[in-house]
Image 1 (spheres, rainbow, N blue to C red):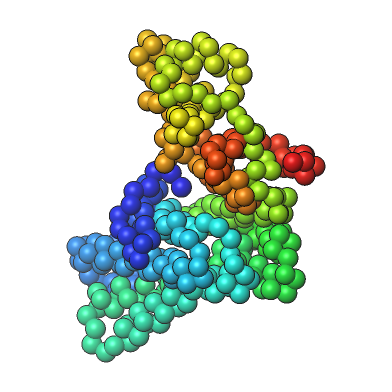
Image 2: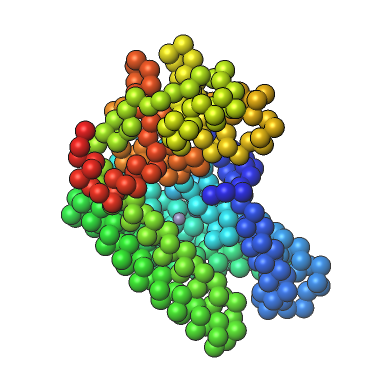
Length: 372
Ligand SMILES: [Zn+2]
């Protein structure tokens, strides 16, 4: 997810906020102050409603964050690596890298979030029941309780990749022990739900003018896209099962020296091979990766005075794989990072170069992967 800023770090997990989150915070806060709280507890001052709305919005996003932390901490317990949690327009997402170790593990990770939401719903309901609570406080906890229970029910619909859909995949996977097949099935069910959300949402919006309708349609669109992306990943894992980065890399690639100027590179090296990227090597050791595009986009007057070293992506920022790296995992990282290429480095130095183009080509021609 792009344009996110990190606001906190909890148990080594980065908590980020996406710009789109601000829009939804404003919208929820405004609808709470202008409509929800005046309905729920009539006869208060405007200032009271605004304060209630601010507190309720903050607590609502805290509960979303706790839900995601539930997923993330359970995933850590299962030995998975967490990339972080981001709050954005549709609430929160916890991003893991790598594969669920088992169907049981995915089940536990999927239900951990809803369990937190259930606990928050029960807790706020319990507080609401305390006699003699100031009405403004009662209004806030009542709304929090309602919204958490509503989210819990919606979230548990088997609309993969929503939590209920992940539970569904885990259950199918547990039965058939076939991860890609389970993902296809859960993905198809999720897509059907996504279509119902879209059409139902559009209908609601047109029939009643309710903003919630447009919202539901957007969520449906998101469910379909995110679900299909996961199905593609599962297919890729099947296609690349048992293969390594070394199987798909271009071996012994043409390398360049870090001291070379961009002018020399563009006039003497690039016209000969026309590769998209060149490993940068000093004394037999890889120090970085130069993208031909990065060199070409430099202004012409900078060519003579700029070196390859100043233009390359240094090794610690580049994607580097061991030759025996699982090809499915390498492909995932290539897809997720911007330049879409990485170096394959073995014990005796650079072994090859691997790019997203090779991955796509291999997926179109599965037999090509078998060679090598
Ligand atoms: Zn969740």
